[in-house]
Amino acid sequence: MSGRILVVDDVKANVRLLEARLGAEYFEVRSAVSGAQALEILADWPCDIVLLDVMMPGLDGFEVCRRIKTDPRLAHIPVVLITALDRSEDRIRGLRAGADEFLSKPVNDVALVARVRNLIGLKRLTDELRLRAQTGSQFGLSSDFDPAGEAPASLLVVDDRPGSAERLAAALSRDYDVAVEPSAAQALLSASNGAYDTILINLRLAGYDALRLVSQLRSLDRTRLVPIVLIADADDTARVTRALDLGVNDHLVRPVDKTELAIRVRTQVSRKRAIDRLAADVEQTLAMAVTDPLSGLRNRRYLETHLASELQQAADAGLPLALMLVDIDHFKRINDLHGHDAGDGVIRDVARRLRSHTRSLDLACRFGGEEFVMLMPETDLERAAGIAERLRKVIEAEPFRLPSADEMLVTVSIGVAAYQGRGDSGTAMLKRADQALYRAKAEGRNRIALDAGASQAGERAAIPSSPGNASGIAARRR
Image (cartoon, helix red, strand yellow):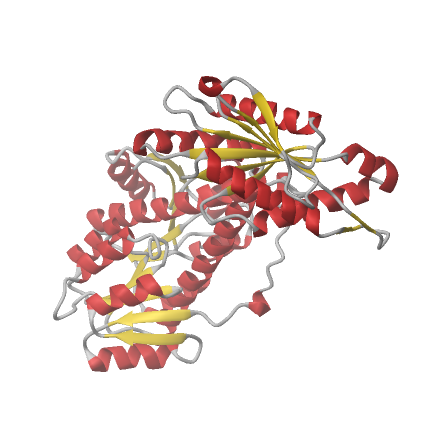
């Protein structure tokens, strides 16, 4: 994985060493010799990570980090502080300034590259979600997120050492809902079924390989984006490096400082919830792209893609497939007599009735104007005709309420077509359904018409309606 890295250090020898090491890994590296110069570069150069020395004249690394993290344009860029300072209070100060990592000199090259790759990977995941979510503004979306309405974050501690688990839970339970699971297998099950905001894992589980658990968590859709924090010993450098390659978000070294633990966990929880909000925005944007805003049904664009998929599945499995084209009768008259608000209300109500009488595997779409399409997998023509007739009766039976509080009866005409085997297409099916719909309209409306396909083309006949029913079924017969 390549990426853009900004190295900030006032000692040129340190800069050259980092440039050589990172360049050997095919990263694109730029350098700055002061905090002020770094901020100038960041204003014009969108890098993926900043490696920042702490002890510099003028703006020190802590202040530069704070400025990066408080700038909305730059806050998503990971910052790694690199310094000879190794006291606990120095790490805490860096973390409070917003640093994503705090590495002490001399820096282990392998650990540095692993952490850089890890942070760039996490950033790119967030960048992708941010980019997709930004599309929402083009659809007029606005976030109604209220932090005060969020439930307390939940954490899962995976640790088979009772004393260690108890200490972690005690340190975190004041601010979070903490669950402790000593069994790695049970923890995997619990995590996949739960909704945890962060998972903390003891790297030295006695009865299970903690790295295998990390790999399993990263392979499941439900836990792929849940932050993982490792609790490691000072001599676990090689395994921590491997864990970073597997997608661990952060780690702490024993003895664990409670303040550092709180800050690192809070950072991961905040990121998880930010990613959740971005993902929700993306989902909403995608839904809007394929949803008709008036009816709430899927739109024609979605139908075209879904129909092609269903046709392929029907061909591969040898299953029937049918669709119906539904048209509101005399819709122009509704608009002319009662106004477009009434017409919109009728469209919404027809959509509601279609939705309420649709099986889970069926798809109801607004095709355009006053037309709707119902796609029915695993349904032959005869069964589709029965479904269409029931829908016609449902729409006819209950009056529609208008904005004026008046009521009116609305009817629909329906054309039904079925898949004719390999060589058939969605366009052809829709055309046959449209031709059947045209016949239903021509023969009096408020009825359904079937198209038996070119192989059954022949004499057309209208089946008389049953007593008390003004509708009929027009069909092509051999």
